[in-house]
Length: 88
Image 1 (cartoon, rainbow, N blue to C red):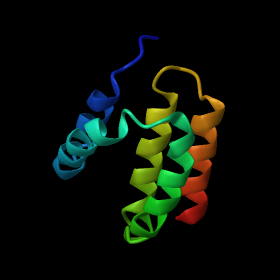
Image 2 (tube, rainbow, N blue to C red):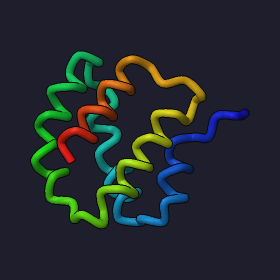
Image 3 (cartoon, one colour):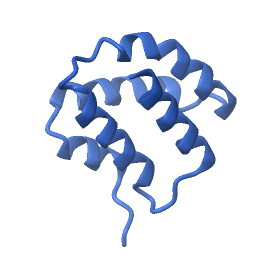
């Protein structure tokens, strides 16, 4: 199966605000060292906990789709998706 660009998966979610926010934030975080990802996610978790109960399952499903987009879940992707899921 051909890997789907991540922005395409986001656009398919139908959440225009999410796509707009990702397009805005991506350049700011893309250059970060990989070791900064986990601490950055820990900083974001309180904001993610503000998602409503009905927003959480589709968010987690989209996160899982993004992690699986290339057909392989890396150890980093696994840890990040599990951490988010545990915090929600």
